[in-house]
Image 1: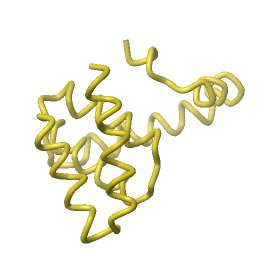
Image 2: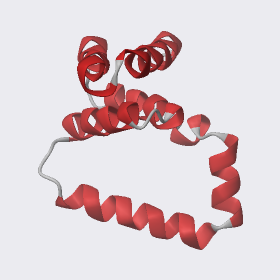
Image 3: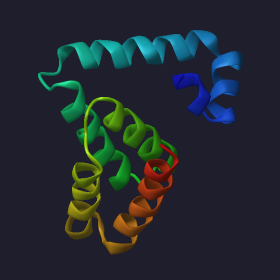
Length: 106
């Protein structure tokens, strides 16, 4: 099911550079194994970073994964609202739009 949401550009990256994609995946797994957070908290933290980076694909991905790990829409919205004072109103509003598109599709 996860592959259903992978953007075409990422699938192309995996196909063209499988060794790099595997190395990146291994690094992500190593980092995940070292952190003390449960899956839901981990995804909410990653969501916050994605919002700050204005990374639309990462926001969408982390919203889906946060929901899969038990985060509520209210918790997800709280992360985006917190971005108003840290990252700026336009960044937070863009993130809220991306979040709504994902949560409405679920």
